[in-house]
Length: 410
Ligand code: ADP
Image (tube, rainbow, N blue to C red; front, top):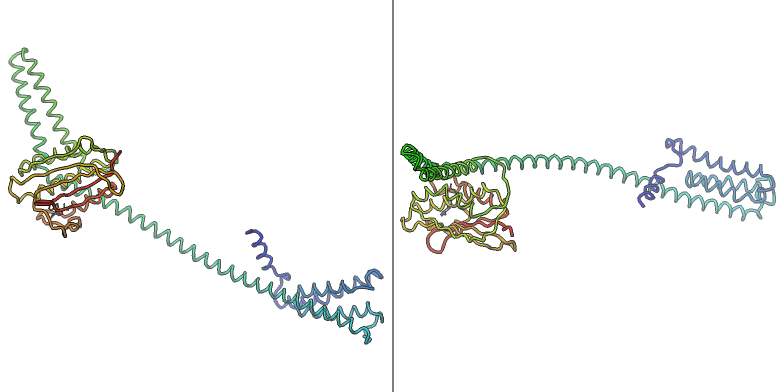
């Protein structure tokens, strides 16, 4: 289909005489004369075979001239052919004088020639118009193709710029997430130091006891082994706290894996235990045993948990000590027909107004003297990158509840 239309266009574009315009005109008229001369030559040379009926041959000459040169050369060929026909094919043979009886026949021949020339001329004109049109069209198509090419190049450059900007933005985001995490760890220095010092003090006590038992004699081997087991246990405890702190402080690429929310929450609570004790806050955990795993980066999810818990502790700083209760609750739920696990952190602190709910997540919104106002904004972006949601609600009664949900692994 495409091939045949291409062939038609190239046929229209081809000019039968591939010459400059002025020369082409001369050649067209010359061809009209020569085609009649050629027909006459054939008539003369053929003797009696064609001479009595030469009309067909002269019509061919007229058609050829009109096809090649248009109406004018066709007309000239018609006149010349009429003369030749008169000369060879009329009762008064070999004379150009026309008798009245021959006139209608000659006029009929001439009329036919003029008609053929006109038809061929029209055809030729239509061909030329088409050729011109197709040339113009081709020109337009080339121009549009060039514009399109330029546009594509510009678009490609813009896309490359955007990609680079997105990569830079992602790097900045990662740096920011890490920086706020380190800041949070900074707030927990006392708590972490306490969690490390406690087992180290126990190690010291047990080591002293071992020394005493050793000097008392070999009969104390059972007590000795008990004290050494305690030492190993305490060293493991201290090194676990250091390891957790180290992994939180590291700026590693996110590593998505199925996470057990029980162990994730208890890891976080180890780090804040001293802080919550110091602020006289009771922490209550309500996590059902059969809570599904969730896919996620452990460090980032711990960062979210830490932030929510520390905000809850801050919110209760001003309320009376007996009201300071923090409840961490876990339950199954459904979000947009997807099974999820919902974790909520409920406190009995100062709370906030319903109309302020969305403001809490705006970057740099803080009511704390030392606050950055980035914690909740970053937590929300972390949870959303995990295909979850993070939201805040004022509680019925005092305090607030901040919750997040993550898709459950069935
Ligand atoms: P920062 O802790 O640095 O202020 P966040 O983004 O974590 O930044 O918190 C923004 C603000 O949201 C806090 O300053 C506080 O006013 C409010 N907020 C967060 N959690 C609670 C909460 N549990 N109860 C009351 N207000 C809260």
